[in-house]
Length: 338
Image 1: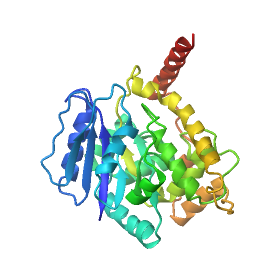
Image 2: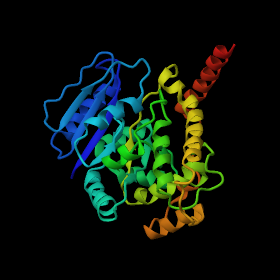
Image 3: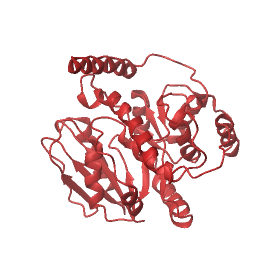
Image 4: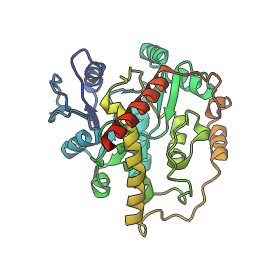
């Protein structure tokens, strides 16, 4: 399979979790048939590779890490037909890549589609410990579908986890480097992909930018994008995002709110500039909740309460940190405008 996997990293020291997980990634892919490219924009760079299929690209240090810039540099060096973006926090079940190859052959080669968007599940700290012991994705999936909130924190039906034909990516444009810090650059690229390859008409509420831990409650572009990825969740073609601590005062995470504002402006601007070329579909999508239920019936999922509500709604530590970050971000913005 002509597949290049791209991971962008930045770490503070050899003790940093990103560095440790990058080492795990190298160990995992060292005997695989895929090319792995890791772009390292850390101040002090320690990653090395002695394996022919694994390339480490050392980039200029970024005081605030930009996944967009670092991924774009890796794309230029990718030597395979297909590119997959794979964050260092991610992990997969035992047969994930076998399933992915089948999907690439079916969707990208036989049907000549240009991309595959992949969902991933965020684990709690306890869920990460459980998963790392047995790599049992069924246990994780069942916990999520039942809405137990013990092993699973939430789900992201769309993110940087995607497979794209390299030629098509070059045609449509790489990641937008106006995004610095956490978030935005992945959704902006996905927006361009689906605007050129819509599954149905663009809904009136498309530009709503709201998140939800409950799949049925998704709105706006996240709901529209869910039609591409929900079937893959039921086919066990999803990735795992392992828990890690999110520092409150990290500028990388504090810029997330700013990136969300940039994102919507970028989406609207792209659609306006290319209005006669995009969203060429007259099809009306099946009602969202009905679509979810139909998928559950199709894949014989009988217990899917977690798709519609959470059983145990608690204030998680990371949610509190996100709240503090928002306050700090708005405080800094106010200071700059004075």
